[in-house]
Image 1 (spheres, helix red, strand yellow):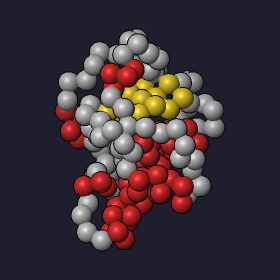
Image 2: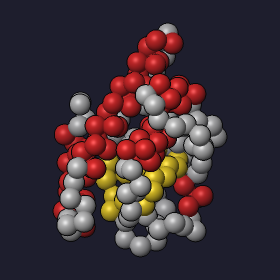
Image 3: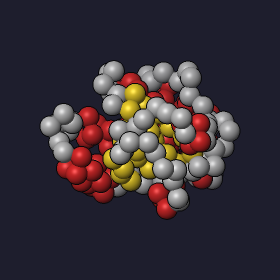
Length: 161
């Protein structure tokens, strides 16, 4: 199953999601991430947050959603920031199921290094919780409509988790 995580800058939240699903999905998923206005580089605190928790950090990059215009075809598209959810997204081939899992942008946090790292740790934990809930779904037996409803519910119930 191909999953695309979208946010505006593709430097923090969508990168965290891609890395978590890559690792925790254990080969059941092909995870991708992109942004509507990519920052051009992955936030180093995002990579530090992943590495600190034992997740591989090689190969992740900040890229435009236009990079996927020719494929692959996605089964799921998840927006992870409110601004990307409100944007006009490209028309994706096939009929991917979409969901919104809004998470505050840890890269927008100002303050000490400790405060910034804490914001990334919280974003990681919220994203991991949502992905864990998704991984627990009986994906092979859910209809597209039911899967959409489940994914949307995950985004809502885990907003403060």
